[in-house]
Length: 493
Image 1 (spheres, one colour):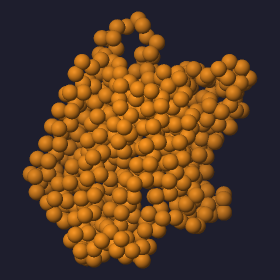
Image 2 (tube, one colour; image 1 turned 90 degrees about the horizontal axis):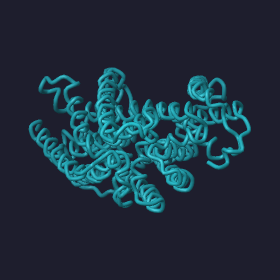
Image 3 (spheres, helix red, strand yellow; image 1 turned 60 degrees about the vertical axis):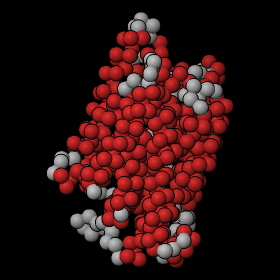
Image 4 (cartoon, helix red, strand yellow; image 1 turned 135 degrees about the horizontal axis):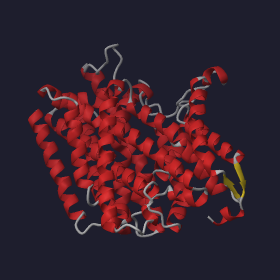
């Protein structure tokens, strides 16, 4: 079985490298950073599915059904609101200013300190969040394949990072846009084929399986307790803001959107993606229900940690690998697709952000394109190495469903960006004191963390969920108002 899985991995990787070869021919810096702004909007929209799902959705969303039922769907509904706001407010701004890195807007609106602060928070958030997504892929392949061979954990991690570095090295975002379409296809096929195999084995239809799961409480869509961290209204609002910050204020996701030929194409791409996400995430929730139902009907022992607690992230892989060769193979293909899609765009975006917001590529006419390309490649390698270090360092801390950790990181690291962009877009004729912005951006997450830690004591039992992101952004916004002054020129930006 291990040999078969390794063969599947090699074949899939070769396919990715072939796509990279054709998309990176005659590439230059513009190809790497903007894809020459020639990407068909429907290709970007379809590829965005895989880029947004990642390994965390692939395994954590189905596994999370065991603990939180279908309440994640509230987050998904919030996505539609978030994408609509991105299409209405952020995309027109980015296209109007012809941005390569979206954090250059903060320099135009406030100043250099704000630009670097925004870029730094993105780098921190994406480096951690995306590395955790990639970690989950490496972790599962290690547990179910490499561990039996006595191979250390860091070996598959290095293999993945080196391969991603190779196929993004020349083509950058242009290559990523096209490889994401392949990742999306195999992610969806893996989920659908697994569900079909389970239903066929148990001789039951999807409606009957969902009915049986509903009777046991596993398909509960909305939590009605306002104090619960998964309360439905909090989930929807949080989903909207998570989309705004993790897509609209995220260089990785926006860099793909801005490869479209026009603003109108980019808007069509975003709104199409928002609708597709509803159906795709429902597929993964149904997958989670089918996995749990299968375990109950067959007596399959769900994986647990040393304390006897079920490990949600291991439910899907443990059943897939024990079920049949077909489910093992499609699981690995989906997993590898998730791993590549969560890392390739991130490495490209991190490189772009550093080159444009710290090395000032957009305004540097004193160095040649060849020199810029050389610097860009060095930065790309450095971020790949940092990515690898985070993956290896995180292993001792993997104790719960990673989707919660990813969103928790986003709540604290994207909050300052939410406050900065909200101020820039909606407060006219005032400009924050630029030198104060880094201090505000650091203080806001700290205050938010303290509020979250003591929320039950301070707010009569109330527990913050993902909406801590909104609190974080609000603290940043208020502080920016306090430390700002009248400036009529800001109304022009």
